[in-house]
Image (cartoon, rainbow, N blue to C red; front, side, top):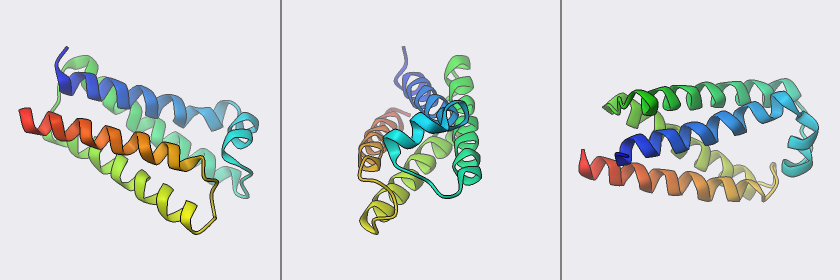
Length: 118
């Protein structure tokens, strides 16, 4: 499997599953990530992340790794990393989000390997 396809499928699957999690079970989501005040916002962000995931899954499935796919993947991972680190540091979200930041950084490195072979 080509490295870009693998990256798109992995990130797409991760995003799709984690994005729909608060939609399917907000209770278990909050048990792991901590209590939230605005559940509508958590669900909105979840849906957006799942749509990004679906787009990456489609790109990977079709083998269509183009610059816009890479921009979506790296941009999303970079933004989520920043949000995780900033808001954990400000003690607004739970430290468990640093695990997500770590995964996002791994995805960024993976995509830079894709770019290097592009």
